[in-house]
Amino acid sequence: MKPRILLAENNTIDHFIICKMLKQLGCHVDRVENGFLAVDAIRQTTYDMVFVSRDLPLLDGLETITLIRELPQGQDLPIVVFLEENHVEDIFACLNVGASDFITRPIAGVKFIAILNNWLGRFGPVTPAQNLAATG
Image 1 (cartoon, rainbow, N blue to C red):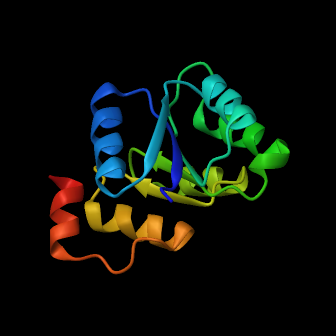
Image 2 (image 1 turned 90 degrees about the vertical axis):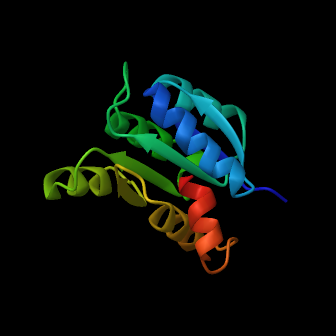
């Protein structure tokens, strides 16, 4: 069964690339553009994992994670945050509100697959062909 992933990303290019990577890895992807839509989607659908941009409009990534964690279905849900840079302050802020993990941009295929493996355990070792497919 395909893992069901929620992708909350407002950057059109990143949205396209990340969605393509997830689909190539065999995931079913639902996409939203802001935090309010992400919280609403989680209320309505069961997800295996959520990817959230730190810089979402209307409700930023930190606020979005906080609201997701307040939902019964969001308490144990793996939530990975996309960060623009690897700043310690941003990492701690995300982890303090309940993020499970983070990944910095640009998103490398090997790191992306490693995060999926860590939280979902369904993708096995990363082969060079998978890395090329995920980044190409």
